[in-house]
Amino acid sequence: MTALEHGKTPIRIRGKRSACKAEKWHFGKQRKHLQVIMSSPATSEISSQAASGASRALKRRKVALSRLEQLPAELIQEILLHSGNLDLPLASPRLASQLSGKQLQWQLTKQALSPIIHCTSTATSQELRRAERLLSSRFMTWTFFGQWLDDQAGVQSDVQPGSSDNADRHQSNQWTSLRPSADLVVPVKLLHGPWTRDKTKFLRVLTANSTDNLTGLTGFASEVAHTGLIDATREQCMDALELLRRLGVAPDQELLRADITDFGCQRDTVMYILRWCASEVMRCTAGGGDGGGVKDTRPNVDIDFLDPVLWAWAEKARKAGDAKGEWLTKTLKRVSSITANGDDTQDAIELSSNSSSSSLHVHTCD
Image 1 (cartoon, rainbow, N blue to C red):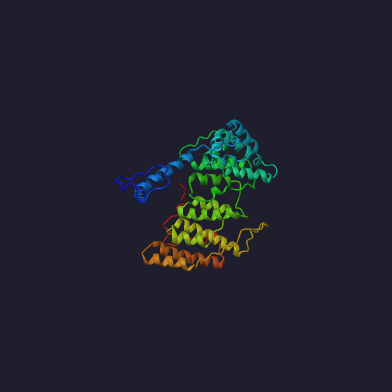
Image 2: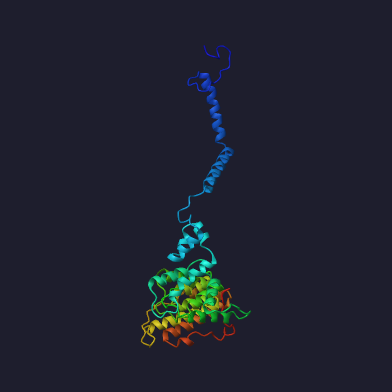
């Protein structure tokens, strides 16, 4: 007889494998009730919090250090100086913290740049790559590089208020006097925006010992520099436009369109880019030679000053009462006529009499 037949309440004996139907039914209801409770949002949130807490505990668990990381910091620094491997601090956060001292960075700079300055002969490709890698490092800021220049020249850095232009010229002369290798490539980090005052000063100094680069930038650097042109136009940074032009970066239709249709047709940059485009078009029309026997290897440019997109923007602005529309129409007519006739580029683009009162102001980067 079962427990129910005797009027007794059935109980479950832990560890018992068999049970009567009433016991199974009773505990089956309990299991369903527990399943509903466990599947409730509150329980799920508690479970997720517990899981996240466990994952955080796993993240906090210490990772075993490599043999290199277990070495004393002084020895690791000596290894970096001896190997010259500037990627070593990137191997782990611990190495980065042990190899971030300014004195160590100073020694690395002296070690990497010494072979490519005062060049009486051509620097090796390995020495150039090492110097380029150093200049691309995160710690190599304009402030750091300027201090290194002053140290090389044996002078104190004492810039007087209002004499920033003189200071820039002086530091450019310092770099030129060191006679760096002409094969040294400008770091990619200096070829794109955002364009700050420090970035343009750094780029101006590194390009101080070169004239207009006939070969121009190549590969990835060329693509980044073209992006830098767009950034400079958007930010109205004339310094950056001039420096990228010095590096042989060529203007194109995209740059001219962006300056007029996307960035509000600011007269400063539009006039500069139109002059630049006109000069390049006429250079290509003349055959690319400079008359001095040096072959011009710069790429040909194809600029359409009668671009319907530009003229449509000018017409829309003119109808809206914007003076830029009338000004742009006259200017595009003038430059297209001059480039077609092959006139002198120095006088190629002039403001019409109606807009001559608006003087051109060259913006420098903040």
